[in-house]
Image 1 (cartoon, rainbow, N blue to C red):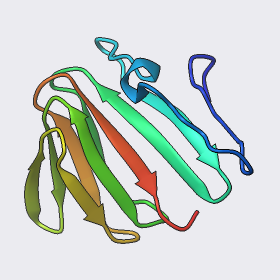
Image 2 (image 1 turned 30 degrees about the horizontal axis):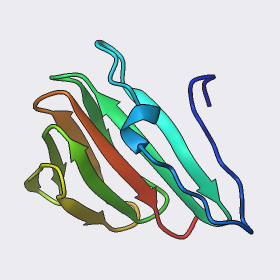
Image 3 (image 1 turned 135 degrees about the vertical axis):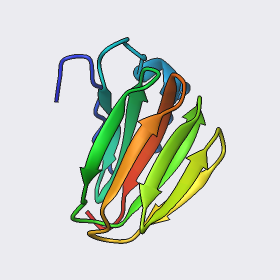
Image 4 (image 1 turned 60 degrees about the horizontal axis):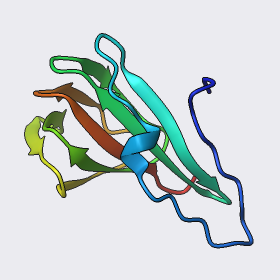
Length: 115
């Protein structure tokens, strides 16, 4: 975890993050990986992409929820392509190979399930 990431670990109180996007700036030429919440068994990570940046194909050890917060990303998984725009949500099963490409500057909320 880098110094610019904010991790909250309050299990017994209500936790409110007023502006998730403010915690995850888009930096040209750098893929941002910001853990914005870690509570009990839940974690929320915001990935920040500059236009054209991508995460090459990889697999997760947990099922994932991906939700576009701004911009537009293309997710390739299970031999299908999905374009996510703000409000779009995608569920990826455990160990499914996938890649993500930013078609414009974008931020995506990543929530691993069952961590």
